[in-house]
View (cartoon, helix red, strand yellow):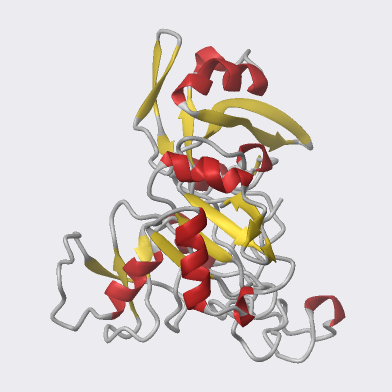
Length: 322
């Protein structure tokens, strides 16, 4: 499970409620069962055994134009792979067969997050159905994966009526029809990611820009928690007498229960966060962050109902990395 904290999510955070019961959810946002070419896929990764860093962007653009056609957008990732947003479904077919781009050998894959959406349904009438049965019956509604949430109680996993559905479309539907049942869909909200290096929320260790590793137990740099010999326990996020990975951390609880809140580093509204209703951490477009960075003290609407809220834990940190 690709959870930075190495822990299971909480039931409330998955279904959009308060943090509460521990659950078992044996899959991650990048479910491998859904990384297939489909008519709804719009975002693709173009990789090469060599590197696009050394190839002229003018040449790459011409090769894409001649082999695939004019696409909506091309972006070079930190890994040197190219992220392509296609213009029409026929380009997806072309990409699925593409093995070379000029003299470069290339491999094309569906982006593991951008083409999919996840939501939770709660229906007692579906408790007897297996996950594979649900996928088979709901596939016509673009469901490509299903996982039943299980509650851990007294060391045992108990199945619940809550089911996380993965859709092969970026747009999460408001409801689905399970036979004659109309099932409303709530957005799937995962627990906040915590970095193993700096222990802050909102990004993984691979994306960390911190210079030094921070101990999760004592908040001192220079060693990891497994080597910590200090008797002083201190959380780097809230300053409390608990390790950074503690579920009792008020900063963790607040972050898990406020997935619609973004904090933008360098914003003039120092120490305060901007709430964007309907936008969840890990799901908002990267350009939204750029727009929010331009907000002045007077504020701009940006077409969104923005409001300023106070958060525990001190320094300004961006929640969610998209």
